[in-house]
Length: 263
Ligand SMILES: N[C@@H](CCC(=O)N[C@@H](CS)C(=O)NCC(=O)O)C(=O)O
Image (cartoon, rainbow, N blue to C red; front, side, top):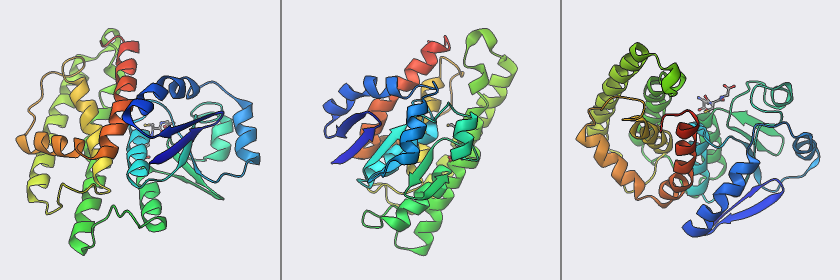
């Protein structure tokens, strides 16, 4: 059972039902408004748990939630004080990235650096295989998601709102996403990594695929999903941490799309 906490509001990820019931309250708290109390709290409080600066619809925050939940690590989530890009946040997190992890005196950004740190600090539920080749393949999957698959998806974000959509840009993004899905399919077919375990390379990949699937239709024309990628998605959903985090995250994805007028 994973305990999670948002400043001023405690919750426990005990069951799917509890988790879903809590989502609206947590989302309300994760607003971009400046809250000086949070900065003060952050600077003065002693945290037993790790603190994550996060936002509700961030893909990389969902990735990190899956990692933390899979490793059964308690954590607290707060919005970036002052909002992403604010002076208040930049004074705490110089890169301005979301998510950022605060663990004692360490403040760390980049979901993959955070994942590697958590893996070294909490190896009891390993997310890297015990073979050299397996670890290399898991890292390759992470890097592919981070530098190839997600950047192709990212091209669509400025064009989610139909009113502001540049259809040539969407066409370009669509072609690139198709290409990257095909590359992922070949990589999955060639990989020895068993799918009955969740590896470090999986959370970022699966959340990115989820966004691509949600955008197909409302934002992107139909995609050519390779069978190997479809099978991989289904297999990943059988991991409880993936299923639970996505169950809470999908309403945020839909909310974002509705706000943009894409649904
Ligand atoms: N490669 C980074 C990407 C993180 C990223 O792009 N985060 C976005 C939110 S999903 C962000 O920080 N946006 C705010 C900004 O760039 O100021 C990671 O893995 O953490």
